[in-house]
Image 1: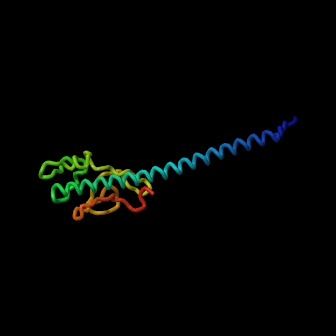
Image 2: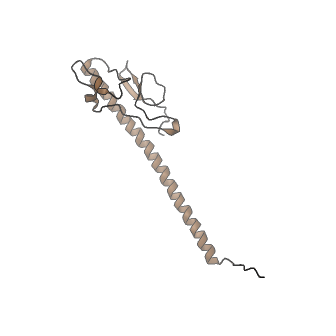
Amino acid sequence: MKKSKKKMTRETKIGILKFFIFIFIILCIFSAFVFFQGKRGRRLKRVTIEIQTEKLNNSIKIFKALEGKYPELAGKENNLRDIKTSKGVTFQEIYEDEEVFTLPRDIKNEIEETNIIRLVKDEKGGWYYDMAKGTIEANLPEKAYK
């Protein structure tokens, strides 16, 4: 009995090589797309947090100008209408939202999605509120969303 040995022709080898080159190029393009989209998303989160921080700080300053003292925000993150000046103006009206902005999740730095306002800076997510100074900032480590 004779075994049939089929030899690959030169055209077949070139065709297979072209196919693998094509697959390689597609994977490179996909990898670059994923990399740049992820980077843009993290940058967008940082910018959004900066905007929300400024909005909160401005609202705190307005409340202080109306009431003469800083608002007690901790524990009332989701009920801003419960914080009122003596004239009946609510923090919700000043901030123009029912609850404090929820900081997004950062899996890489083990930060959970939350809007909790803390009076102690522990870099575990949410917001850090310094009532003595009347300032608020994201309660996050420096490397968050980078």
